[in-house]
Image (cartoon, rainbow, N blue to C red; front, top):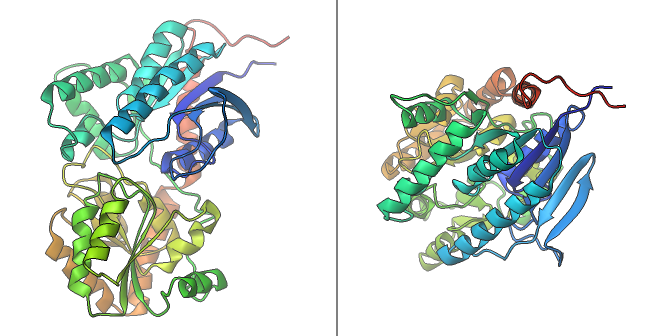
Length: 427
């Protein structure tokens, strides 16, 4: 019997964490568990405040056939740079130790979280374990941090960028989640040798999230519970983080004060949630509501409760990050109001599918006009616009399409994990 290649995923977030990368990587590894022997190294869950009471530094468990090594880390306050640094440093050290303990790894799979250091774990692991390394970049850093002026220390940026270029160069395969990100990668190495890379889109479970009418019992109950009946709901569902300009975008809601038929609903957690909640409270914005992350199995209802979904990025994020919430919105067949730069991956998807409108970041009056336009459409027109997104997703962005691309890359890289060697036969 041919020995299955062993892939060790070092991915920070994993089931039951609620982070988008957790959900993607959990689905990916579950689909690949019969093709490869898989170990996952991840932090104890806590992305959205989940509690865990483990006292062990490393804890092993299984999710189906997947071995999961959980790392105990200090709690993180996302509004504190010191707390973030402490968390990230602990993760980097302990993830490296956990990886070095893993025996027989053919391929190390890392993602770009934490920034730069996620890739460096794979670089160090490849060097010390003589394994292959696949580096999956969901966010380019330090470019992402630079776009929001997270720090103005140019020395830090230069060092971080040099390290991440090394991670890319030394990796056997770089994966990016958008065509615009592939352009950024090529731009990093302009005039030099561009690392081998593949574009693989993120996805959602298009069988679990499908278009539903608001009169579905679960959706109707959700709307009634939160006082949202007969409202035009502009929804933002996802990470309320630093890279989405939400602190400015929420000010758009002031333009609709006195119009009781419209509500801005923010579902999720993140670094700026407290700040935008405070803004809404101080300005008595009764048309703004906040809810925590909804359980994964309830997403098909909460996403379908919206009339329009906001999919946004800060200016300067083009080619640096792709907001993965677009796939769930398209699966639900809902219209999209994108606040995105021209030429960005999601702007392209909205344009090609016809599933919504796109306004340039920081054009807040344009956002107001776009909302008013979408409200002016009758129900059938709005529904038809959203269903164009669903149709496009079914043709181009299915989960199987992306997972099969991952499988092909992992198979190709793992088959070359020992140049010139054939797979050993199990006795």
